Image (cartoon, rainbow, N blue to C red; front, top):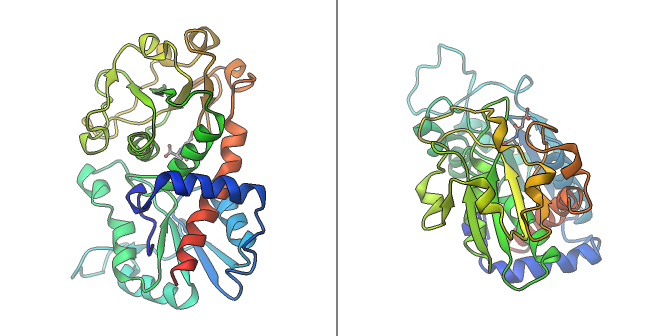
Length: 314
Ligand code: SN0
């Protein structure tokens, strides 16, 4: 594998999930694989889990890690060809990507959707420019349209926690005070189509995700109906794809203890960070069925597996 841009880069999901679960038992088993190699983590947006778990993963493989926050600290990058750069942008991605490639053996990038222009976001301008101009592998740490490290984490977490062969998994939209990207939901939806699961999406009318991700997945506009008999409830807010970037705070979609009673004693999942008592009630995130902390722990093993696969290919 050269780049980890989307879950399409996973050649065999069951093998990857099993390998990650094995790696979790002995995280230092490949501690010399990355010796004398450097991973550079470039952040255009905030992070807690992604930054620390990816660093931890690289350290477990013996790598050196360098981190740069672009927002505020880096030069503002230009992505268009042939621009007369007499406005706000200081450096073209063509130079930046080639320069960083000389310092790093792998570059990982976080660049969220701006939610201003759907075509711009869905063209994956930042990630695809780095993939085009960098001379080393690129790892997606949440791009405009996807968060494949999170989705791999979620596949590992569901596999570890499932009680039956084909669990019912429900992705539920929830309210949020801010307009958030569709990236986490897109990659989760994509991932669930590769897993042995009864998968249902529930959200208010107008919050349909892009059909290129949802394909034939059933959508139930009635949240309570969708939650019935669920084994896993995965909660996430996203802004509208059709009315691009429109948000909603409709409190009737918040996940409560009452709603969780409709499920088959479901495990509660969220990628974090989560707005307590807006997205979910305290009682749900603090319940025994909440596996969000364990889910966040698995971020390390998802990242470690991806970096390992890239190192083995170098
Ligand atoms: C991001 C998102 O894509 O939804 C990252 C999730 C891993 N989430 C947020 O930006 C939440 C910000 C907030 O203020 O709650």
